[in-house]
Image 1 (cartoon, rainbow, N blue to C red):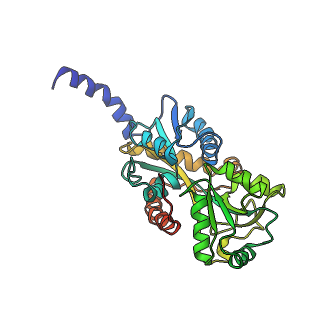
Image 2 (cartoon, rainbow, N blue to C red):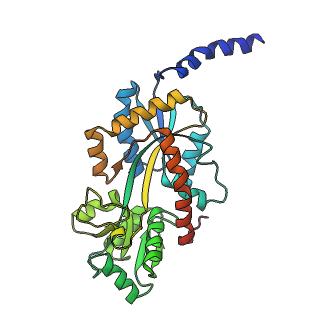
Image 3 (cartoon, helix red, strand yellow):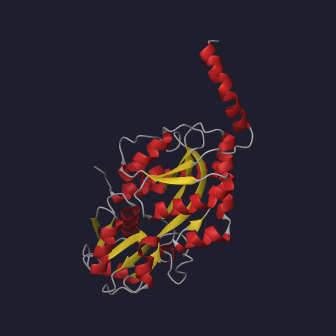
Length: 320
């Protein structure tokens, strides 16, 4: 063995030994969020990072790397060194929807990541401008059938959860609506408040305050069960059996990350998600905490990819 190779091998032995036992990080951990600051994914990442940092004994620093519907930041983690110091807050978009939307994905969501733990489910909330006469989902469906194509549903862009949820609703209810794509959820909500569009299936956290203030009317949530934040608002499934569009997020590590590192991270995340403090904070965002082991998370993702692909097919969504 060459001297340089021998030295490199000897230097690696402590790291290998640590990886075979209980992993204890000795420097800050970087959690990449593949979206801009301030959104629901960013808020969730910061809550989780804050909760697990004391348990790991190191800061967990959130880094925003937005672009290409989450693909840019996700790819960066997929190519990162698998040492536990770079992890990703991935979503149903980055690890399910985008597979069907993009012809040339820069990564394989199953092969190029080590699932660590699912963090939460996030409902979309079907809301309308108060000027819309429908008081419930059945009323909205009746209105849409009476006036085909006249109801404008806003969304944050083609293929986003807002678009897919509205398209799925239209398909299941047998109605015709007009989908209006915006460059992000915020401008769509602004136009909804102003009456330029009539309805939207938005992530709950982005419209909850407007509903509570009476500026928007909540008709239903897209998850299979009602949200704890709005217990009096029914699920769409109560009117259309079997309907479910549930956003989710979770933590991923680069492929090849040693199992003890993945397990340590997974255990700390799951433990944090069982705490009343973190659960309360996530509930304020409209999220339903999960916390799962790597195997369960991997199995969950395998079932989600075809589910979201079918929603993309129904919606006819495309990206440039």
